[in-house]
Length: 146
Image (cartoon, rainbow, N blue to C red):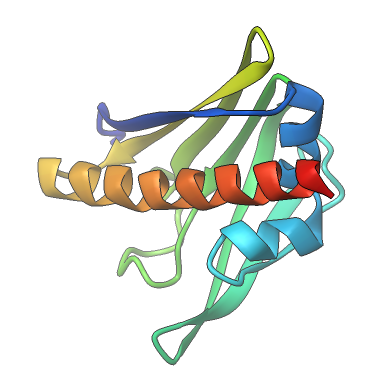
């Protein structure tokens, strides 16, 4: 059964949604903001997305499916973590949504993750995503200075 505990965070980036989208969907740039993770997918709705890397000396293989993709607006995927301690079955997947909103010459990135099993898990997810978005902002803004 799905839980309705939703982690949510957002950040404002000094860049256009086009510039943010490029970083959000370019493999070598994803690695820079997503803790060194190697991501593989063809960026099409219904396609699998794989996340491989190493965290604190332990290898991981996380995965999901792209549910919705609207360039420069929304990226939504299911997500299951091999390090989460939960069995790989549909009810244990989260739905992660990146939503981009133009605000003048800035872009607000809002990220949500549903199906958190407890308030503690929701808070942990929120803190992790805050860290990811902060790093994403740094990568986007440094890419735009080049």
